[in-house]
Amino acid sequence: MDLQTLVTLTTGVTLLTCALAVAGLHMYAKGRAQQAALVDRLSAAGQLPETGRRRRFRNLDRRLRGTRLGRSLELRLAATGLDVTPGEFFAGMLAVVAGLWLIGQATLAPFFGPIAGLLGVWAAVQFLNWQRQKRIERFINQLPELARILANATQAGLALRTAIGMAAEELEAPAGEELARVANQLTLGHSMEDALGALADRLPSRELVVLVTTLVLSNRAGGQVVGALRNLTETLEERKETRREIRTQLSQVNMTSYAVPVMGVGSLFLMNGVKDGALERMTGSPLGQGAVIIAFVLYAVGFVLIRRMSRIDV
Image (cartoon, rainbow, N blue to C red; front, top):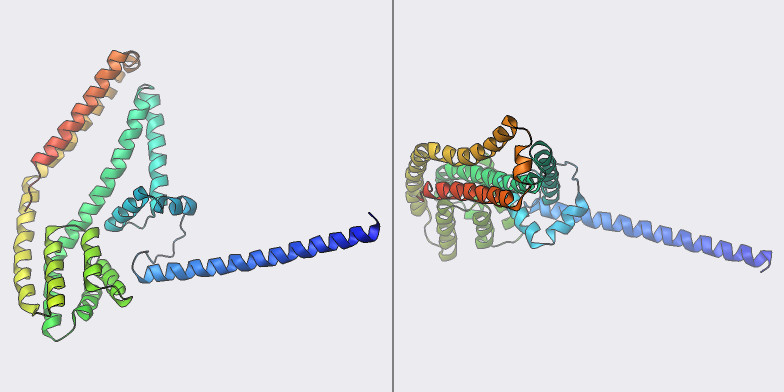
């Protein structure tokens, strides 16, 4: 191969590489623009928080959202109101599990490492349930005021869609945030039934289901919604007081349900503190490992039974 042919071939390869680089940059810029447009549409639909915070673990989040576990986790996080993506929460949970695994293995015995990791998963799930229930309770406490605003707006001649938007502006979080999401979905063309049904799925409660059913039926049949909302406001006020009394009466029982497993775990540290290495020798045999597993299962059963016996549906 002579020098001229080599120069021509090198020039051709360089030009081809530059063309591919330009095409790749163009496709990358186009993809970024499409991603930004999609994020804007999802934010307008109320499905993404408009915080501007830089998201972490994007690849993990994208893969997780494609699974059933990820979609369920996304729905739970939406109900809690936390500004956390499924990928961020999952990564944080894995870090907590790894930390508890190492702590249990180092402070007690190697056998307690996996058990501590499972406790980390349980603690993460309980944290989500606690945050979700706390937000549901706050939303239920706002339902009487919400029904009153909707009744006044519809009595003034406003459409139900306009009344929901007005209630979203007047109410504080979480009712204001959730109603703003419903209003955005209605603006994008979602039906009233679908938008309110999604709200009931995010924050499940009997009170909200009754309100959603009343609004949907009134909107579908075109009936007078003012009288129904007035009666519903009084009922929600009474249920609010009843729920507060029941929660006060059962507060001690709820604390007992958490104290039982804490005492069990505390006894392990006490045993290991009294005689160093006792737990490691106990879990060194299959009989001791079986006894520890049975004890943890019994503590878990006791926790569940106490919680179920103290649950009163109003």
